[in-house]
Length: 212
Image (tube, rainbow, N blue to C red; front, side, top):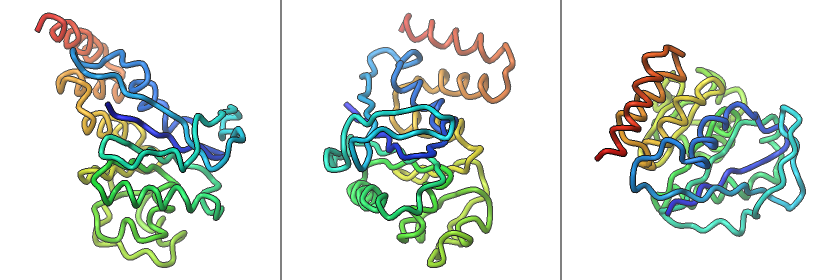
């Protein structure tokens, strides 16, 4: 079973996590037989954090509690506080997880935190547009691997810009393999366009899955 660790920090960008956490926690569109995942919030201390939207979140566990395993997933949301040195420990943990093949997802400001320590220098990735990482990460050397796209999946590393939360969620769900492929496509098409035919395709895919 996958354990999804969601790092929380003050000024966390609420909207960037909404799609992926709600679908993984609820399991409402999971395919038949898919194991439910365990979703835990993690932080550098036991103190509650306040998101950019003013929501208070109390962490479930601490960084040292993260199990370094291929079935562990670490999600790093955007925030305005990533330059605080106290977040260095979670970036070190991200490096450990990537090195053993575990999945790390980073979006918005979290991509700069990874870039700052060289974790994006040799792997396809994206961020908040060309020039963003250079602006905040003087030692960044990954320009040749940068893709100007909402979200980029490179095996066990999935990065996104601040407006790429939906595609980022899709790529994370795809990596975990918990949706049928037609369910995932219909889900993404519906939430990206709002067209009713995609909603009906989503519902049909769930019904088909129950009959199989």
